[in-house]
Picture 1: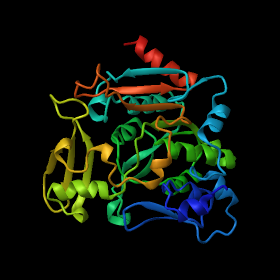
Picture 2: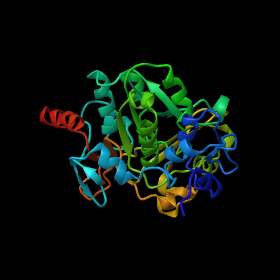
Picture 3: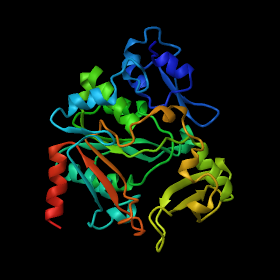
Picture 4: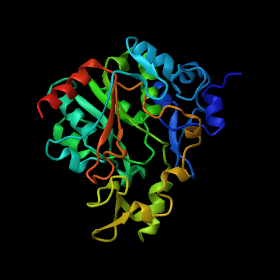
Length: 335
């Protein structure tokens, strides 16, 4: 028996990506009492299209089917999915490694796409408007290298796609979009259903993912830093600590009511161990796409023996598009 988006929502398996709200404006994405974004599809009677764009619906194409269509010429690895090449490395160009969560290559590649006029903008997660919608982070559209740099860093926080796609609807041009694997899959499903979206998405950039967190993850750290969650105005989940392994990072928090910031080492904070799975979305227990198998290129942390002891961080990279592969190769050859 197959389950569609109705079963996904009722069963608590909604990831809150907002693809259904992009497909149908009658759908809302709301934050529940647990700090998780969930779809409200109650206003929609015919769910056929929503079934096709929900990443956890049995009626939507799975990662293997999507990647077979996207990258028919590539071989498939059981862990990586389709792949062209794999790397570990970092950006030498000033600023990118320093301000990135790991090696800075994600932000570096995005600015290259803008600098080379391969895209008109980048859709990525940056600081949100907490005063208006209560969210510390949200998707935004950056059209300059400076804006892209400003949006660097990993955000362990729930976000959704529908609001930024409302803005994208009124824009022309081609864009790169960044997301965790299930979000990239959602975007691929939307592109398959809506040519108007497909023609605007030039590249998809995946972020390696263990699972998505609720808002309570940030609030837990705020409590331990002596900040009431309602006063939490800023959090950097990945502050680099000189002299420590890259996996032993800091978490920086700021309060609305107090000046200055609080930096705590991740290993000192209860709940920071990713293996404990605190505040994890239920759907993440049923997802086997860690590398972003439907993304044109995927980036993650190179917490491997050869790299982890350098606090500045390094990336693992999986490429699936020859033109993106060429950018990396040319940069490597140029030093």
